[in-house]
Structure formats: structure tokens, C-alpha cells
Image 1 (cartoon, helix red, strand yellow):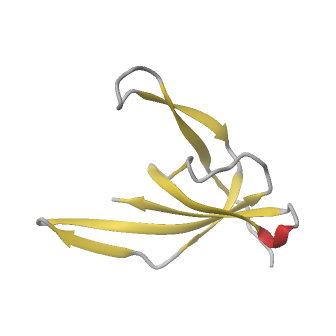
Image 2 (image 1 turned 90 degrees about the vertical axis):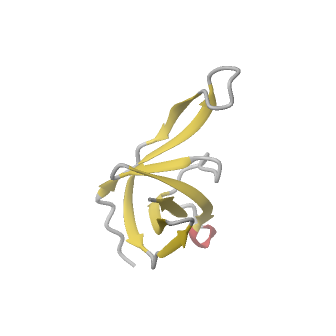
Length: 102
């Protein structure tokens, strides 16, 4: 399968920057090129508010150090990483499944 690594994404990690629970800084882990595929999303209606769940599959060239505790920034959205998979165990590409909420 041919991949089109034509979208630049940022992989960041939140690092505590003080004693308060909400005080953190974002540490840039990587800025890889990615092949991005959207997956069918869902909308939730509760308490009078509508929220959209946006699941996306990011495929990047293989690199170590990407974990589910990190986030992906793309197109002004923060994606929460759900899983990171080494495709076929060949150390060529990583498939990252992530979701954003809006």
C-alpha cells in the first residue's frame, strides 16, 4: 500500500509545570509527516449540548517513543491517542488511532 505522507502533525506530551493540577506545559516530541485517514465519527447529545467525536488514523514513519499518554495536534484540534501499533512488526510505519472532541 502506498502512503501519502503529506500532512505535518505535532506529537506533544503534557509536562507538569507547577503544584496546581491544571498547570502544565506541552513538550514537543516530534513533528512527523503523516498519512491521515478519517474514520466514521459520532455525535452525542446530552444535557442540551452536542459533542462530536472525531476518530482519525494517523500513519507515520516508524519511530520509538510514541505512547498513548501523548497527544497529536493537527488542524487546531487536539487528538487523544488511543493506541500505537507497529505495522506488521517491521519497524517501517506506525499506525496511531486517536480521537478529538469538539
